[in-house]
Image 1 (cartoon, rainbow, N blue to C red):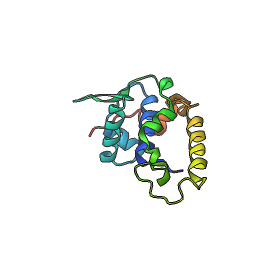
Image 2 (tube, one colour):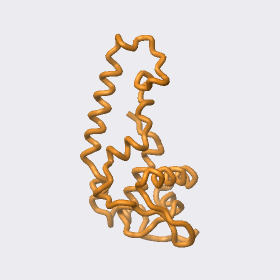
Image 3 (cartoon, one colour):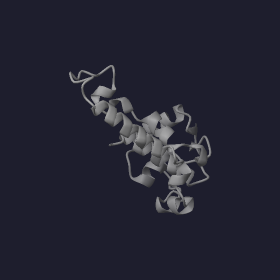
Length: 148
């Protein structure tokens, strides 16, 4: 299984925000992880529209968690950010052109495996992914604000 870059970055943003009590700009987060600011801005917009983060504009603005990290369920976030119908063609009724549909067990097997995967992720919150917030923040240099 391969999570999309958007899901990967989305989880990383939420983890970093969970590790610090302050708002962080997209630029700060991108620098902390060494990733593309432009791609991260799109991810931040998606997280905001999904209700996971709150944003404020202007000087001193940035992103912050909309809920406690203990309330943010990893399985739910992955379901929201990931296009799971695209896992394989036959799982998408709109795209399915497979002539073996109905006589093949792949769709059922993968559907069950995907369900097990998501069920396992449902047992974690963002807080669980950052057991030591201070160390996490320090490791990424997020406790240091650098001017733009």
